[in-house]
Length: 99
Image 1: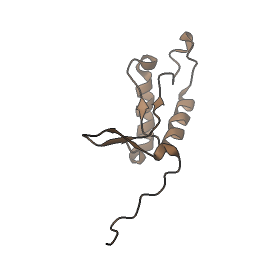
Image 2 (image 1 turned 90 degrees about the horizontal axis):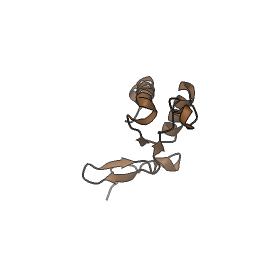
Image 3 (image 1 turned 120 degrees about the vertical axis):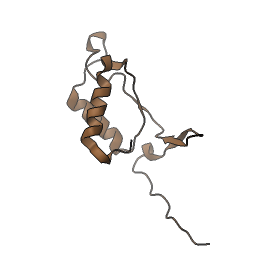
């Protein structure tokens, strides 16, 4: 029996060991989700701290470079600015993003 496909390379970090999230559509995601509720600066007055644009981009880049692909976000987080940051980040990465 010949081998048609080479085995997938070992991921550089455990974030690349994707797990099945939903069996019907076959969605696989990283084992750790990036919780993005406190990423930003709109809720600093409520004790959530503040993270500027540069810090946000560093966090997203670090997560992505370690093969993370699962971000928890909602339009209620950080007064809807988080999605703008994520959209800008994805646009900057261009076709390089896996999402």
